[in-house]
Image (cartoon, rainbow, N blue to C red; front, side, top):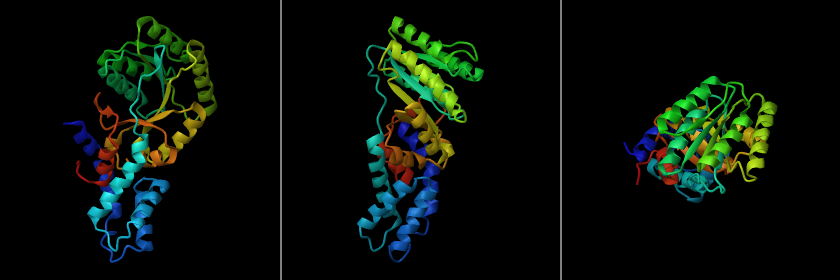
Amino acid sequence: MSWLDRLRGGFSKTAEKVADNLTGLTSRAALDTSTLDDIEEALIASDLGPEASHRIREAIARQKFERLDERGLRSILAEEIEKILAPVAKPLEVWGFPRPHVILVIGVNGSGKTTTIGKLAHWLKEQDYGVLLAAGDTFRAAAIEQLNIWGERIGAPVIAGKEGGDAAGIVFDGVKQATATGIDALIVDTAGRLQNKSHLMEELSKIRRVLGRLNPEAPHDVLLVLDATTGQNALAQVEVFRETAGVTGLIMTKLDGTARGGVLVAAAEKFGLPIHAIGVGEKADDLRPFDPRAVARAIAGLPPE
């Protein structure tokens, strides 16, 4: 199955939810203010968020349709979603010199953070980058074990310590090892404890200080992994982590298992942060940069062009 097929399949539940919420709105005799309000509410109920939903409503109003059929509505929907997604669809680049390019990966427990790191490493290795993984989530023994399994699976070395160990020390060792062995990218797993913000901030600032001593530009990326199944809660996580961790970009996972994929659009419109990749499955190659047009058409329930 091609990536485009997997993408469409991944967004099928979201497309169904959007279609269900819009059912009956295109058969009305007139496209009046009341109908436009109902369309806006239907889009908000589809997790597209108030900002994006209002923007789409205004775009429909500007078209001055007397009536709007279902196909016409889907086309405008796809067009406007693409306009929202296009500016933020930015593949991750390994630009840091001197090497390694350091990527901190953060997110709440259960967001798919450690799995995403494995997939991200696989994607970079496919582009012929040398990758080293650092198990900086020392609070969960399972996270260290999981990262080791991914390392074996994709052929990437993993640097790890003991459960409860010093995350900053592991990151320090990771940079040293990456520098000594000519590694291009160091991907660092971190502990995901949203409920204890002060501890999280303390740990992340310590990691940043250690990295800064080794390379003033590191970390080059701070990526927040979001679980699409959490819907609007994902947006609240962006708020918190942007404030506490200086997030530079987003990766959204689990889009294949949810009808709440509209939150991708809400995040793009609300924050404007780069969305480097999306996950639509469990396999190593199910995390990829995305084509805004293909995703927009998938959410709107239109076939690929």
